[in-house]
Length: 231
Image (cartoon, rainbow, N blue to C red; front, side, top):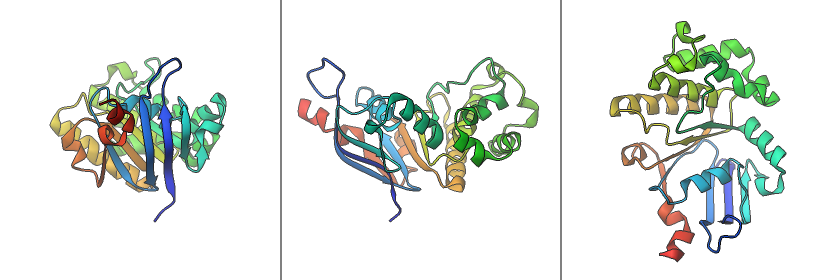
């Protein structure tokens, strides 16, 4: 079995002054190269879990280990740098910078991480290759992202998440704005690119049709024992 990329042990999370846990996950292990789908409706704890996995927040108790690094043992600045070096995140709202061009948005992570910059090699060539593989033509590279279609913005967000060969790619409901045909094409591309790079993929959504494409599915309503205790 490949080495674990993600290891959660006895993880509890609640905001300061809250009486009850929002999350209690006794254990969760994801191995290198796995594609994991996490499903759950609004309010099931998806955002809280993603914030823990990306180091935006730390657990109230327990351990969140990513690439054998305990995130709760790092400072805020160290967690930010760890995320920049090792993770690629595809946000639900894409979070592209409107004052940058399409290709500048893709190259942006390499400005925050020497590791990704080194892995990318020729930055322009690598960004161009990723975009071309995601069916974005060279003619669009220097356009402001505000002039792109939703589908083009989404594929730009994928290229940005993949540049620099991150070990872990986390996708937060990135297909919510797509129709079924574009959603299927998007998933085909995402699987292809992450498999070629050897990246582990964590995909969070409530879309059951997408869940059917994943070899491993976790229902957060069952995984999060805090909700069971409150029920």
